[in-house]
Image 1 (cartoon, chains in turn orange, purple):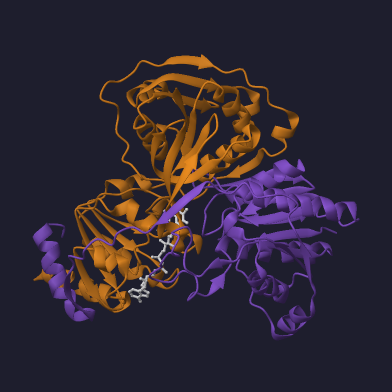
Image 2 (tube, each protein chain N blue to C red):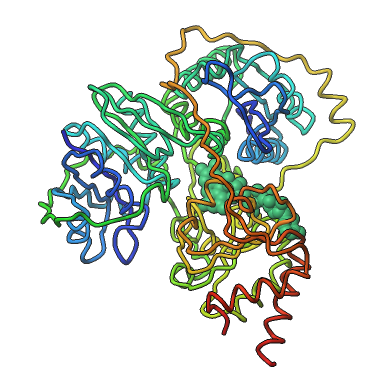
Amino acid sequence: MTTLVLVETDESGAVEVSRETLTFARGLGDEVHAIVVGDGPAGLVEQLGAYGATVVLHADGDAFTAYSAAAWAAAVVSAAGDHSVVMAAGTPRGMEVVAHVACRLDATMAANVVSAERDGDGLLVARQVLGGSAMEDMRLDGSVALLTVAGHAVEAKPADAAATPEVRPLDVAVSDADLRTRVVRTEAGEPDESGQLTSARVVVGAGRGAGSADGFKDLLELTDLLDNASLGVSRVVTSLGWRPHHEQVGQTGSRVSPDLYVACGISGAIQHWTGMSSSKTILAINTDPDAPMVTKAHYAVIGDLHEIVPAINEELRRRANG
Amino acid sequence: MTNVLVCIKRVPDLGGEISLTADGRSVDDSGLGHTISAHEEAAVELAITVAKDTGGEATVLTLGSDDAVEQLRNALALGCTAAIRIDADASAQGPADVARAIADVVREREAGGTTYDLVLLGSDASDTGDFQVGIRLAYALDRPVVTAVSTVSVQDGTVVARGAAPDGGSEVYELPMPAVVTVMEGGVEPRYPSIPGRMKAKKVAIEEAAPGFGAAGSGRLRLRLPEPAPSQVTILGEGPQAAAAVVDLFEKLGVTR
Ligand SMILES: Cc1cc2nc3c(=O)[nH]c(=O)nc-3n(C[C@H](O)[C@H](O)[C@H](O)COP(=O)(O)OP(=O)(O)OC[C@H]3O[C@@H](n4cnc5c(N)ncnc54)[C@H](O)[C@@H]3O)c2cc1C
């Protein structure tokens, strides 16, 4: 029995959530194969080997130059026959490709899985439901179990012993129908500065409590007053377009583990918490003393961040000049 | 003229604490209000906009119990002009069941002369988070599908959909109709119902359908609530007066400049 992991890449290699998924896959105890669709960056095969993949399946060619979920699914299906579990990271891409695969193989899929174990012929999984307020135990039966792994459910860790993967090119039959849904254009967004966020010593987190796109001035000033500090935000903030996506912390954003995380106006939903829970010290600033972020933090100040943060900045400036 | 079908699901409006039913299989929603997921609110908004812009109609559909009529009426109040309820217990259905039931309705209507050029759904419902109904529906109807986009429009008979790209930019899809598109919140601001809209919604007859097959289910064994960790928080103070204590902490951690 082997597990197949669909890997997403960027210029530097397998993305963090895909490396987490490889780590998760190793936890099942079976041999792990990786599948890469389209061009991969230099060094990718070695990196996948470091994460324990013994085989790297590679689908390449004209059908994959522009992204189409259906074409990616065709690639995964062409390789799925030999595997008892197929998984991807719980990104929009991972979710949709695995769902397409589920349709093609007439199989059940579990999304946002946080743990999995073999149970006879099936797989017993626990997955996040209800926006993370509850877990669902679910059984995946059938010849192949399909799942996506919730972002940051595990920490990405290389295998104890690196493998030297065998690279196998895949011959994929992609139909015209699969290419109807190709991306026809892309537009660049704001430059991605999430590297700065993940390496910061202090992350000043801001959530809906910031109030509006104009509500970040004091928070940004606080990052200037602290040593190597960056702004991180909740998904509400990026969804509302207040701040760019590369600043998002959480399951569908970056995972940070700074010395200090200052959570301002963030309720502490599980999807946010998984992205910052490994911070050494957590300070919450919130109007609600019962917010999960407050009860789970090490330190908290209760009140309006728009009064408290300026007062902190003022005190920092006063001591710096004093 | 684009006729749009938008599919929604009644879900509990989760505030703070939640509790489970005695059998541990569902959330006890007796004391809770109900809503639709934010992604579906965006889908409804886009459905109404596309229908208006092209001179077509937007029909709202749900699979659910009688209670779900509340969510259908809300969508009618916003500008959908017809509503269909597939009478079934949503909690007993897996995503494949729901997709199959919707596909049956779409095909039945098509046979009766009503076509839906564009079917919109949320990318995933806030209760189950399956991310599958739209894709499974597209396969059942043999239509192209793109998922998790934030805006949708119809230009010269082609669906133009734009969503976030993994690198932080955006990506654009163009698909022929009939098509299925699933939507994520963030691209549009859902409108509010008007008083005349609410009045009109009350008068629309809800069309009913029944699934013609037994549900296979979702594979759910049980739900579990995470144990709340004991709080060990130290409250540094309330309001701006706490600033000195906060800066003391910063100094202790050595994070000031
Ligand atoms: C599949 C999935 C993936 C997700 N991924 C992510 C993710 O990667 N990252 C993420 O963050 N979320 C993610 N979410 C969303 C997550 O569930 C929450 O909805 C989100 O984190 C809430 O953001 P928030 O805390 O800013 O807003 P809210 O939950 O609305 O909380 C706002 C908080 O601010 C406080 N507040 C309000 N005004 C003030 C004020 N003036 N001063 C101080 N405090 C104030 C309130 O008391 C409240 O606690 C995901 C959800 C799903 C379903």
